[in-house]
Figure 1: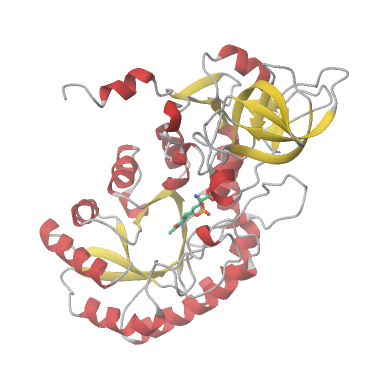
Figure 2 (figure 1 turned 45 degrees about the vertical axis):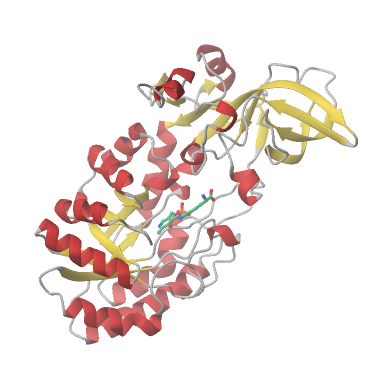
Length: 421
Ligand code: LLP
C-alpha cells in the first residue's frame, strides 16, 4: 500500500484523508504533506530485507532534516548519516545512538570532528588531510575514533552527473592506489584510530542493483586485503543511492529487498556487518508538495499553470532536470480541456518550473495541485529566494489526524537576521 492514492471519486488522498480537506484546514500555502505511516512502511521494508544480517540502517539526514521525522526514524531503530557539524548536532538532539551514526564528507571541519570523537560516532576517512584532522580531533578529544575508509571504487552509477559520486574523478573518497598509504597511516596511530570498516557510496537515484553488486564485489576484495594486514575490520558500508519510481509509470524498480539480496551472500561470506545509508528510498515517496493554482496562461505555443510553489521550495526539476509527478487534487471541472502544460512558479527566473510538458486538465483558479515524491531533497534544499519563505510541514498521523511538524518561515524571521546591526 502507498499513502497517496486517487480512488474513483477523483480526489487525491493521503492515507484516508482528502488532500483537499487538508488544504482547507491549514493556514498557509504551499506546504509539504507527509504520511507518518508511509515512513514506517518504508523502514519496515528495509528491516524485512535485512533479516538474517547484522546491520545498521543509517538514514541520510541530508535528504530531509525535519526533527519530528528524525525522531520517528530513530524510534523505528534507524541510525543516521551526517555530512556536517550541524547534521551531527541535530542527530544527537534527535536522540540517535551515536554508535549508529556515521560522519561522512570530503570537507569535515576539525571542530566538528572533535565533537564526533567526543560522542563516539563512526567517521569515514575521505582524504589525507581528512585523516590528519581525524587524528588531531582524537587527540583533542582524548578519544580513539572508529574509522571507515571511504573507498572510491570507480563504478559508474549511471545517473545524472551531479548525483554520481563513486567515479574515479569525483571529489569523494580514496582511490585504491592510495589504499596502502592509508593503512600505514592508521597503523602508525594506534592510540587515535581504530579501523572498523570500509565504505563506498556510488551515487543517488540508482535504479539497477547490479551496480551495487559490482561495487560490493570490489569492496569485499579490499576488505580481504585490509584484513590480510592484520586489521580486524567488521563493517562493510555500501552507502545509499537506491532510486524510486518518480515517473509513476508502474515500472518495476528494484526494492530494498532486491538491493540487500544482491549483496547478502558477499556480506555473509566474510562475516561482515552491513551498513546502508538510504535517504531518498526511505523518505521521498512519503510526501507531496501541495500548491494552489494561481492562474493559467498561454504564451506562444506554451500553456502554463502558475502555482504558488516554486524552485525556491523545490529545486530538483530546475537543478537536475528531475521529473516529479504532478497531479490535481480534485476532479477537473466538467468541461475542462486536457492540454499540455508547463507547471511554473512565481519566481523571476525561467528556470522556475516544477514540471514541463505535462498532460493535465485545465484547472480552475485555486485548484489544488501536488508535486509527488517531495520527501527527499526538496524541503532540505529549499531556499528563501524572492523571499518565498520556507513552507510549513504537516503529516497525517496514524489515527488520521493532521499535525504540523514544522512551522513555516515568516517575514519576521527574515528581519531577525538584521536585529541590532
Ligand atoms: N550516503 C552518502 C555518502 C551520500 O552522499 C548520500 C547522498 C547518501 C548516503 C544518500 O543517498 P540516497 O539514498 O538519498 O540516494 N540532491 C540530490 C541527491 C544528492 C545525494 C547526495 N548524497 C537530489 O535531489 O537528487
